[in-house]
Structures are given as C-alpha cells and as structure tokens.
Image (cartoon, rainbow, N blue to C red; front, side):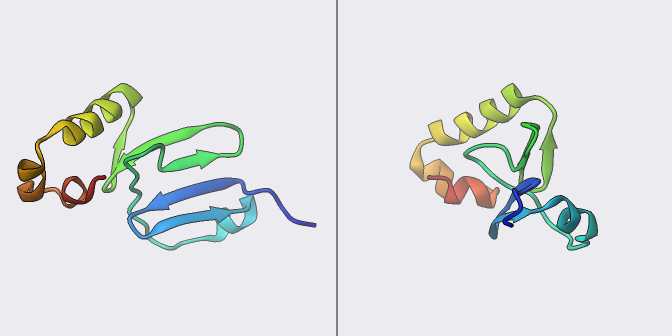
Length: 89
C-alpha cells in the first residue's frame, strides 16, 4: 500500500515528501526555501512560506517580497546580495 505524503517540503536543493512517521523521525537540518509557493505543505492543507530559511507568518508579506524581486530590473537582480534574487526566474 502506497502511503500518502504527510508533508512536502522545499529547500534550495529541491522537493522532498515524507509520510508522518518519516517526518517525525527525520532529524536532517534543512533550510526551507521556495519563491513560487509555500515551502511547507501539509496533507491537511496547512502551508508555511519560507525564503532562504526565513519564515513569513503573513503570506501577503511573502508575496510582496517575491514580487518586488521579480519587478527589479535584471541588472539590479544580478548584483543583489541575496542569492535567491539573482537566481529568481
């Protein structure tokens, strides 16, 4: 029987899905990161927005920061000190 993921997390390295037991036993340190949606998605619909390890309690604040970075001229994005802004597509 295939178990439904309890949680899906996104880091700068990629996406990982866990069952509830796997998540409870996992002790791997992670730096959550996602600029195109929530970095943590629970099977019950809960979500958490993170950028480069920083948690945003307010989705509007998260959306505003990502949109601000997307609206920057390319020349400014390329010299921005935040790595994720330079790599944002």
